[in-house]
Each structure stands twice: as C-alpha cells, then as structure tokens.
Amino acid sequence: MEQPSNRSFNLAEGLADKKRQHLYRKRLEVESPQGAEIQIDGRSYHNFCSNDYLGLANHPELVRSFQAAANTYGVGSGASHLINGHSSAHQNLELELAEFTGRDRALLFSTGYMANLGVISALCGRHDVVFEDRLNHASLIDAAQLSRAKLKRYRHNDAAHLETLLENSTGQRNLVVTDGVFSMDGDIAPMPELASACAKHQAWLMVDDAHGIGFLGKDGGGTLQQFGQSQQDVPILMGTLGKALGTFGAFIAGSEELIETLIQNARTYIYTTALPPAVAQATRTSLQLLKTESWRQQHLAQLISSFRKGAEQLGLNLMPSNTPIQPLYIGEASAAMKISEQLRQQGFLISAIRPPTVPAGTSRLRITLTAGHSQQQINALLEALQQACKTTS
Ligand SMILES: *Cc1c(COP(=O)(O)O)cnc(C)c1O
Picture (cartoon, protein in one colour):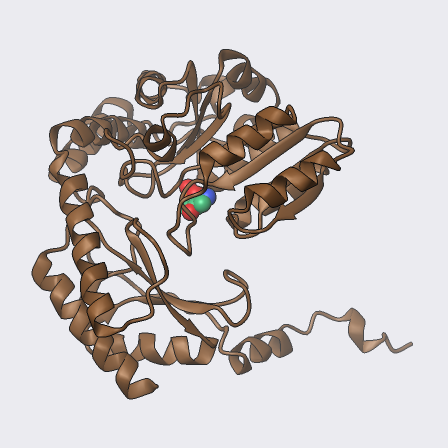
C-alpha cells in the first residue's frame, strides 16, 4: 500500500524552502586563529563577528598554558567528572571561578548549552513554572522544555510584565531566567527590577551571562558585578568560557547546596565527558589576564563609544547597546544577507542574523567589537557600513 506522502522525510523540500526564504545557512572555513583579522579561502578579512571580545582566544600566554597542561595531563579527560575525569586543573579553575564571581562555589560544564539544560532540568519539574524573557537564548528555552515545567515568556526586559505573570502563577516553584547581556541585541537585563519582582514572589532568579562575563563590571565579573548583586539577589549565575574568556566550556556559580544538587542531579553534568584539562588550565590563565591586562576592557569600551558616536553621525540604524554586541537593524532577511555579502566583498566579515535566531522581520547585522580591534579598523568599518547601506537601500 502506498504511504501517505506526509509521512516521509522530505529533506530536499525543507532545504529548498530555507533557500527561498533567505534563511539557508552556510559555514565559513577559517584558516587562521581568531583575531581582529582572520583568513578565509586565502583572503584576509576584518573580523567583526566573533565573541572573542577580549581578544584572548589566541593570546600567547593562553596558548602556552594550554600546551604546558597538555604535557602534564594529556589531551582527553578520559571520563566524566563523577568517574575520574575531574583533574586538579578543573578543581582549581572551579575554586577560582567561585572567587571571581563572589559565590560559594562554581561547577564546570562542557558547554553553556549543556549548563543551561542541566541546571533548569535539575531544579524544575512538571509542577513548576519557568519564566523567560522573550529574547532569551535558544538553550534557555530548550532547557525549560526539557524540564517539563510550564514555560511562560515575558516581554523583553519588562519586569512589570513579569510581575503580573508571577502574581498569577500557579506553579509550585517559580524560576525566572534571563540573559544578562542579550546575545543578538547587546542590551542589558534590568537585573535589580527582576530581582525585586522575584523577591516579592519567592521566585528564584537565574542569569545567563555568556556575554557579560569578562567585559562588564569593574573586574570583568559580568552583569551581576556591574549591578552589585550578590548570591542572595541572584542565586544562579551561568557563565561561558568560550566568549570573552577565550577558551571553551561553561560554569554555574551559586550556593554550596545548589552546586551539590547539580552534581547529584544535572544530567548534562553527570552523563558527559569532562572538558580537556588543558582547556581548564588555559582558562585559569584567562582569569589571570583579566587582572594583568585590564587595558583590554578599557580599550574595548573606548572602541564601543567611538563606534556608536561615528554611527550616529552617519545616521546608521544601530540598536541601543553599550556592550561589544552592536547590531545594525535591517529588517528583512534578504536585505540583511545582501548587505552582509557586500561587506564581505569589501573584506569585512559581519554575519546577518535572521529568523529563527531573531523574530521575523527583525533581521540585523550583528557587529561585534573586540579588544583586538584598532581605532583605524573601527573607522574603516564605519566607512564600509555607510557605503553598503547606501548602495543596497
Ligand atoms: C553562546 C551562548 C550560550 C551557549 O554557550 P556555549 O558554551 O557556546 O554552548 C548560552 N547562552 C547564551 C546567551 C549564549 O550566547
């Protein structure tokens, strides 16, 4: 008997659809380390799309400590943390991350995606409610779904809307989750307002600070350091190591009880291989470099402010942001693709961010600045953006 056609996997049709909608994604093949300039297909590009905000990914001291740790520990960790993959490099990094974030303890995860899945699914279940900002990172949305809690989304950075939802919540326990710095927008969550809404309704607050750690706050301690919020104000802090810290992996920081609960219950912690110890060791060097090379944060802050000033003079439609993420609003996916392509021909690498990463009709160029950039590069970028926006509009 013939099967109904809708039961087959018609992949070709799905792919063709993506292409028609200008939503098809392709990968670049990078031939050099990350940096302000990168090499692709034998050509050098000004790189304005990495998350290597402090320019540490290829820092010689990071490379040296990674190599030295590979000599000491080898490459693979060989097992999960709970079997025997937890090395003294991991242990020391956890102690240092706890101190760095001003929390009782920290726990390493293999990626930020896994940290988010692990913590939310370990803490919440069917009778609970997870409240999330509408623009939260995909991993946080997936985490709530995996936990089987009810997911409620509040309007972007709208603590009053969150309060209304909390007031009407029938959840046994309520967990509120926000990006610290929004990954595709660059703006910062109103943490004090969110914390007071949570305090009023006995909800717990979690921040995903993938883009705040390393840049925001006096010591690069992130969004919570910038707002002066303690472990009591925001009990769950997630940070990643693969962005400003220049390595790979992630951590959760919080109370002794939180961390022990995760070690016992977080499935993405328990059932996966520990990070290579050399990655942990290199990250310890990143934490040192935050202190000894604090010029990186200062230089980056200067570039951000000069870029914004220049863009304003040119009438470019930058979205409001004081972080290294400086999106230029375009609207349609096809237009964003076209401008990104034209910039690429001129030697500027800037990615077009399209649905489903951002809501339909809000495609944008996600420009990221790093401490590795020079003022000359910023000037050249502004000129190229002006040209590209003029010729494609
Ligand atoms: C990058 C990112 C993650 C995922 O971290 P990985 O370590 O890359 O898996 C999670 N949340 C936010 C907001 C991010 O930007």
